[in-house]
Structure formats: structure tokens, C-alpha cells
Image (cartoon, rainbow, N blue to C red; front, side):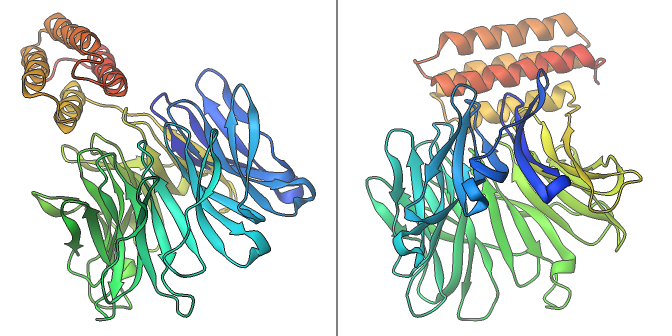
Length: 445
């Protein structure tokens, strides 16, 4: 099963061996194929994330198969045990591009689990709790902001979402009356998304939180409950919502959605069945997940963009597939059942994007505007992209290529003066995807 893909196209996941019922974390590249990353001395390991530096994180059984520990893997150093907070076990849920790993760990005596942050320089740091015995870190931004959920009292099971920074510590994002709440994702602007449930009995509701706006209820698609699962650089949120208030049918009729501050909730629909679920979203606004195709029979991986709507990504011949992650170039990964194999047999799957030139240009323009660059720079860059679009639509392939080349040169020239190195790399990578689309598509009208 493939669970993550970085912007270089490196894919990670878990590979299961039926002999002995063991598994191995793997890394896949087009050049090297699938490589098993080993274990921390036990029989099994699984990867959960890969960042843009090629670092891989996950968890592995330790010597004697006693307990699971989180790990970080690099090509130079191999698999390294990141340890625990003094207890027996640690589990990893996310990693930033700087190599900061977050998750949850037993504390000394194994009496509780606490959220942790780990870095190569600082080791594992206990993030504490909001008063209860358990906290879990679910995501971390490149600036080091950690989010998750924590029990708020040792005497009940109420949880609240939290945000943690090295400077401010753990901050409770819940509201009076919340009984269940948790944060699922955070972007580089500090926007946190998740779900919260109140004592009013209305069901869990998706929320967005930021320091300047506070908690914002994102609503539902007509049902009782919703949850926000991811947020991209421009503040677009993806999640899932019930479409009916009938509790017996709510899950069966849940639909994926996107939300923006200006447009509110958008129902992504289905592939013909009753439900759809989103798993991930790119900075370009591409959503991936899976949707029922035929009621009670099959569900397929999907990709959704505002321009294309929901597109069936198909399977490897079996009745079910699911897309779990997508990168900013449009590569989606997940798993699929294969033709003629037992239902439990699934293969890690990579879906290659087939963008049109115009859709690739649209994604690039969205990324330029999402960065909130100096106005003059934004105008200069988008003017080149608008000119490339016009040239392409006139059938002038070479003119479009020349204008994209001029865009790349200007981006490269503004590294450090208006653009960070990371921003420049992302824009150049997306521009190169436009060049590739021009090479593989005929002129568009």
C-alpha cells in the first residue's frame, strides 16, 4: 500500500510478506523501483510519510518484536530509531520538510500517551496535554507548528483540538461545551482544520481555526456531521460531510467537500454511487480519495479539480481502489485490488496525471497568487502565464514555450528577493509540468 508521495515523485508505504505475516516499509522511485527500508530489529515496519528532502518516517517493531518505535530513514544514514518519551512505544503521524517528526508516545511507566515532536538536533520533546492523560500530534507545518488533540481532564473522555509552538506551548482550540474535538492538519499560514462536537447533540462539525479569525464552523452538506481533513497553502479545505440527517444512513451518504472562505462548501459529488471520501489535497487544489461507483459493489479512486470535476482513476483490474495522497505535480498514490486475486490482495498504485496545458497553467497561476508575493512581482509572473495561455490557444506552441521559459528565468532571478528558495523551486517545478504538457498535447481551442 502506498501512503505518501513527495514533490519529486518518491513514494512510500508498506509492503506485506505473506510468509510469516511480516511487512516492510518501502521507498519507490522511477529510477530505482521499490526498495525495502528494513526494520529496527523486529519483523515489521511501515512508512507513513516522505518529505521533499527524501527523508522517510514511520514505525517499526524493535528487537524481539516487543514494541513499536518511530523511525526516520535517509539514504545516507538508513533507519534510525527516534525513541520514546521514556515508555515502551511511540507512533508517528506526520513529518515536515525540515525533518520534524510528530506523533504520540508512552511516557515513563507507560501510564499515558503524550504528543511529541522530534528533531535530529533536539531529540524527542514531550508536548504535554490539556489536562488529561493522552494527547496525539497529527500534523506539523514547516515552521514547526504542531496540531492534534488532547484529553482535557483525567476524569472524562472529552478531547479538544490543540496547536503547539516552541514559543507558545500547547494552546486549547476548543470551545466551552465541546465534548469531542481534534485537529487534523495545519498549513504554513497557521490555519488549523479538524472537527468538534458539542453538548448540544448536533453532531461533529468541521472547523477552521486561525489566530486572527478564531474558530469558524464550516457547516455541512445537509446532514448532521462533517469533518475537515486537510488545508492547502491558499486556505482551501477538504473534508467529508453527511448529506442526510438520518443517523442510520449518514455514513452511507457521506460526500467529499471543499471549502473556501469566499465560496463556502462545495459538494464534490460521487462517481455514481452514494458516497465519496477525500483523503488529501494538493496546493493546486487537486483532491484525491475514493467514491462508490455502483452501490454495494465497487468503489474507485478519484481525482477532483474545479476544472475537471470528479474523475474516476480506475483500478488494477479489481473492484476497489483508493487514492491516499497527491503531490503538487498531480501524482496520486494509494492502492488497488488486482484482477483475479483474493479480495485482501492489494497492490501499491501510482496514478500519473494527464493534465491539459490550460489546466497546468491554471494550477501554476493559482500557486503564484497563493503565495501573496509583492504585487508587482505577481502581476509580472501572471502576465507571462496569461500570454502563454493565449499563445497556446492560438496554436502557437513555440511562443507558449518561450513565455514559460521567460517565467522560469524571472522566478530563478528573484530567488531571495521576493521569492524564497522553496517558493521558487515549487513554481519552477510546476512550470516544467506545463512544458511537459505542451510536449504531450495537441493545440487546444
